[in-house]
Image 1 (cartoon, rainbow, N blue to C red):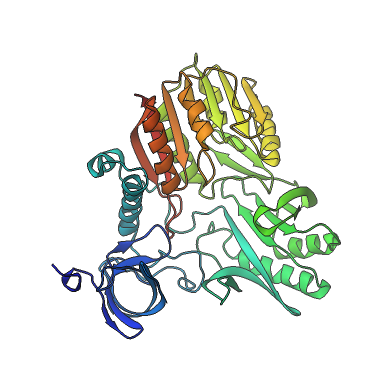
Image 2: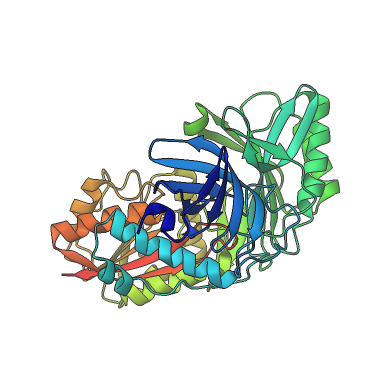
Length: 458
């Protein structure tokens, strides 16, 4: 069969192509193929569409294109619930049905195992469970962040645009609401951005971004203003936000350094408690604005359940929790085991962890501040959970984990590519083998997916 006869191959006319969209990528684009066999990454299309697309990049090995006309809509294409879908960059999969989203996310995990981890295709299919859907498709987020842009005296607070400028950077667009945010708080986007826009615009002050955290469980609402150190209208900002919304906490997070490696230098409490509370399972966790917490609370609870299922901890076990954050997994592990060594490198999260342990009256945990490789606990763990950032595990951490006598490891991953790479390293060592990978859709309407992988002694 020639490339032109291949199902899905493109028909080209100058810079315009007719494309049969084959599948979703792990990203905002969908994928098709040109007549010469090159992959075409298409923005604005979903799997099953037939589109007319304009070529934006013609590379030696692949092309990029923007769908301009939907000639034949996919049976999985739906009308998004968000009026900004396609304009805002936050919901690139919103035109895809929920069933198709879940299937595509599982397929991307399988694909990463095969392409990056070099697993056998049948073995990868066996390992990966159906993608779980733990919560609502909209209104599931407990947090959104507003981007900031200044053009002379004009200030815009809103969401990043889907389209980028000539430098590849997205713009910022005003929005009245974000349907992903908890229903009680989704209208706060407009009121907070309007109030702050007035303050910073009249004072000539710049923001890096603004975080809004809302809990339907504790009723807490926090507004966090991320800025560089220096002069700031603290009292005015606190007052206009008090008038705009009933925030339980307003803080200013000071950070400095290069854009991709900025460091938090302090947190100023402008009004209220100075922290945000969320209830996860049996525990109410207190989190400072810089600390990470899953944006989907019901999804976070499902992750905890899957980790406990994978580890089956007993009250005689010694546990290890690497990259533990403020204690999402540490607290339930401490209730079920004799001892937990919990390692976290981020200072604000370590402080939150200590506070959460004190509130929960759990004294059988040793919080360890520092890098997981350098501060690897000097212990022999029976069960281990790791929840690394997107970059995954460093090779030396994999080696140290393989040297542990543990019967099981639960690996929580936010990136299928680095998960596949690390599982290949575990497999090559021969000590632990993956036995089950469960994708969990913590981020409906986007391509992101969280996974919990159970590894047991080989």
